[in-house]
Amino acid sequence: MANPFLNTMQLAEGYLNGGGGPLIGKSVSPDNLPAEDYGGLLGKVLVVDDAEALKLSLTATGTLRAGAYMRVLTKAGSAAAPARGIGCFWDTSANNGYKLKVVTPDISATVISDFAGVYVDVPAKGSYCWIQIGGLASLLGAAAVASAVAGNLCVFTGLATNTFDGIADATDYYATAGAGKRVVGTWYEAPASGLIKLAWLKTMQATGFGL
Image 1 (cartoon, one colour):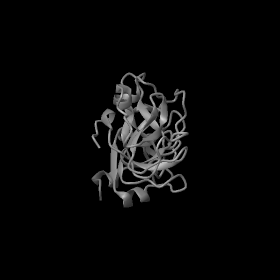
Image 2 (spheres, rainbow, N blue to C red):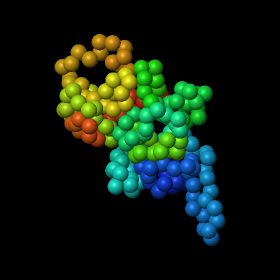
Image 3 (tube, rainbow, N blue to C red):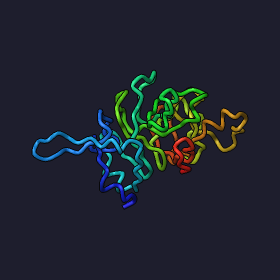
Image 4 (cartoon, rainbow, N blue to C red):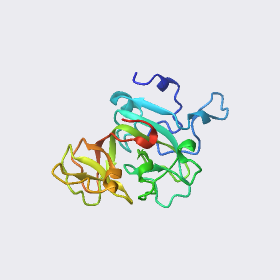
């Protein structure tokens, strides 16, 4: 078992990518008693291997891979809508978004360095959900990927775009500080325009996990 906490984790939606819900965590009680909410699960991290990730995957949505996942609240008032494979960021308007575990899909040059992780499904705004914060993750490619080669540097499409691009090895990429803000890891699969492909998340500074 990759994570000893897995045995006591309450998956409110039944899966890590179950679509999010109104409760942080719950357990269905016997004898038709009300479900119990587990508020202490907010911000908890679950680390799983590939076999465990598969068991916790709603495969109709997608198959999760080995990595680290966190229970968060996605912002009710975000301008953008959460979507599978896009980045999310700690909500700086939530009076310390990291502390309150509030994330948003809204991106800008200011908040890109508050990268929290990647949505693994399509939760409704204002719902509790799981995001992936490390490991082998499914990322949504840019509308027009610059270089579609496995092993490429994986970066945000831009300082204000929460999809992901591939940068060829020969590219003189680090010309600005903004370019450095965009880097999240490397592509495990060849990225493809507008499609979800696997990449290694390696730079999760805003979560405190150097994965």
